[in-house]
Amino acid sequence: MTDIEIARNTKLEKITEIAKQLNLTEDDIEQYGKYKAKISENVYKRLENKKNGKLILVTAISPTPLGEGKTTMSIAIADGLRKIGKKSILALREPSLGPVFGIKGGATGGGMAQVAPMEEINLHFTGDLHCITAANNLLSSLIDNHIYYGNSLEIEKVTWKRCVDLNDRQLREVETGLSGEKNIVPRKDGFDITVASEIMAILCLSKDLKELKENLGNIIIGYKKSKDPVFARDLKANGAMAVLLKDAIKPNLVQTLEHTPAIIHGGPFANIAHGCNSIIATNLALKLADYTITEAGFGSDLGAEKFLDIKCRKANLKPDAVVIVATIKALKYHGGVPKEDIQKENLEGLEKGLENLYRHIDNLKEKFGLNVIVALNKYNQDTEKEIEILKENLAKKQIPLSIVEAWAKGGVGATDIAEKIVQLSEKKEDFKYIYDLEDPIKEKIRKISTKIYGAKEVEYSKEAEKQIEEIESLGYSNLPICIAKTQYSFSDDPKNLQCKDEYNIHIRTIELKAGAGFIVAITGKIMTMPGLPRVPAAENIDINENGEIVGIF
Image 1 (cartoon, rainbow, N blue to C red):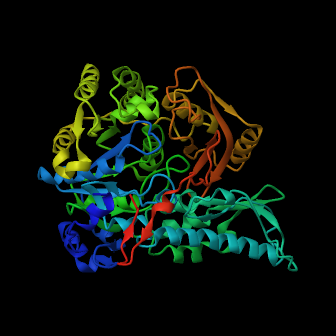
Image 2: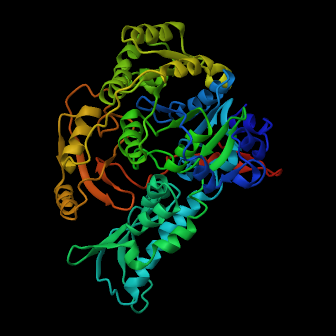
Image 3: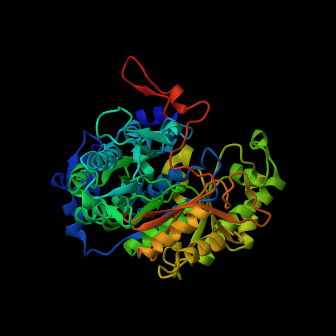
């Protein structure tokens, strides 16, 4: 059966029953139908002084184009912990419509390890991303309206972009105000995908509605001729934007197919944004259960680094253990095995590909000082010899490994890793950040690029050099760094999979996100508005005469 068929044929519990598992009453939730709910902001206030449970971060090796099952693994681990008698909860990101209709499909896990209702979560869910889109574009309309009525703020350059939650490369650069009406000022504009909007980052990094409203006001929308920034609060925009986000800031409660509670909230990508679910959701989950399983987008060089250096720093958190997800096919892919041969046994290619895994292990264990376990997401075509090679090599490095059959068996296939995580999370750690906030902007970028990516040095375009000077002159140099980089390689070249030779990181442009509280460094050819593939997943998505959706995977 397909993922959607498995999900549809599984009987879910009413969301009120899932809430009861967490000692939440019907007054603590706002129901969105039978199987979804928002959790009231009063719940965290009530539990604020309760001791946190253990925080388990799930990350991965450098992914292949179709992903390695990180979300599936996260779900299976949460289910596996329940199987061994532990109180667990998931804290995951919300899917974006871009990948759903693009190449990757949905983001609710797979097989027997899914969160549900999968069609609703993958599509409109509770409307959070639509709220973010609306708030983003409200600000755009207020900017252009202000200019239309005389521009009393003397805005000379607008840096704020519109957004839409779809992959649409045609919108990367557009011209607006072409109607020819009196007083309309035509200008160049562009769109980001909603998950790359600064408002998404603000929602995910704000601890409550009050801070959200304040951070929305801190958004820099453009600059005056004097080079002074113009803020959203100068347009009196942040109050109305906060109104649009008043429900979106509340975490969403759903369940796995095995009825494990799951909080799904916020959804920035990790290659173009900071890649983590909301601080609100994670903090709440830590109060509601003994083990919180969360994930960070793409490989550990992107999502995990940002989770640790941006989110953990802001929220004063640290993971008690980190799971690195790997697959035999991905290891072979990084060992130079062609795509068409990836299903065949290839021991030499596998051993070469282990270098990618080792780098991720080293970064998390040695650079960040965290407890690490490798989870092999097992596929039917994986041979005993290939699995034995992985076991032997990790044993030599004294790195724990668990073979997980998440897709086929769900929580039952993850009890071994659940037991190992419980043990691992009790071990002491020496957690440290990769850089200090007081470091100069270039030094922070250098430390990430050399320590985590393994680059020799960093090269900057003239535009990026100028932008760094401007940010420093405005007094924002002490913010954390969010590097926008390809997910497929440690380098900024998606085709450089093995990274054998020396390479540099190339910073094309720098963007100050004063509202979100970080600086984005964009490398290489990375785009904040993705495009669709030659054959989009949308071509196979449909609805039948019974009203059932088909084609989402």
